[in-house]
Length: 135
Image 1 (spheres, rainbow, N blue to C red):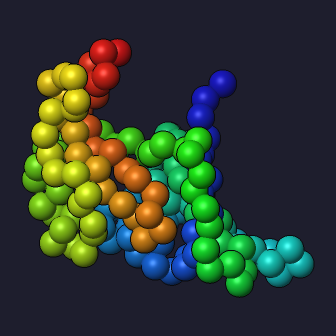
Image 2: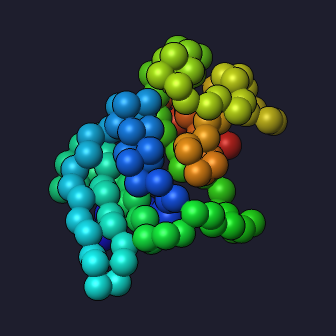
């Protein structure tokens, strides 16, 4: 058993695809439209789906707003250098909401960014990723 993908609902599929590909450097793996049920899907990831988990971006036609609720936290990405990645994300138009620094109560270097729909994405330095939050 393995994780295949995480699905998030987005309000502008093109804007979300641009963020995940141009700002974060993921590849657009595949897209599909379902006119009968009025939704479109785009799958993005750093590798092909048979090699690792990806993100499914779901656009329900005509929906312009979602409530994230209090249950969903964030998506986490491992990066080689959190501070440098934050700089690149800013240069590419991304929104850094917490600059690189140690996690509260620990020493692991993290940062947080937001995608166009306000979903939080945590950046964790690869060399510390397995130790994050005491793991």
